[in-house]
Length: 193
Image (cartoon, rainbow, N blue to C red):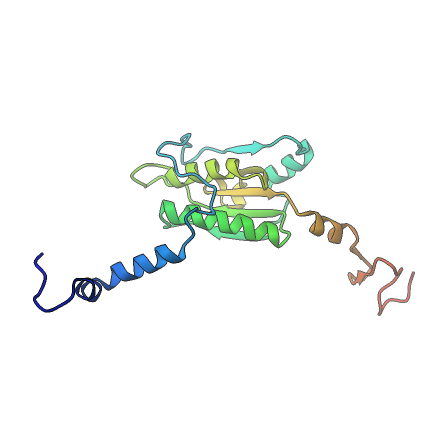
């Protein structure tokens, strides 16, 4: 398009395209390298809408994996990815797993849906499963039992940080459920030892 007469090129361009100015400012503020290590390949192993899927990495005891598979562990956090685009879902999954691990959570639930009515069935489900395999923090995952969402939901078991393991190990409770300090044998309101 020809430039209007009397208007410097840069001013005309910024005045005409405020979205372009915002995009450039955010690109400058963003680091060159994406901190999210999850990849977004064109093809991933395809899971069906009703497939029950799971993975147990080395070091996870069979009993722990069985309890996860049967839904015996109560999810401590939930992420809902219904009606979310693939690129945004990638970022949400990454942030959710990072924050969950930093907060010392052990079991999380990711609701991705079955995707049976999608153009490409179970596309988001397939990508979520692929991403969970890429995470070092995810020790195991499995489709949730039917009472928690079935094939449209995945339960994930996370690696806890050493600090959170230490705190949990040294926390005991009295008969009334009050936390007992490590150095004491009773809490402030219970006199029984």
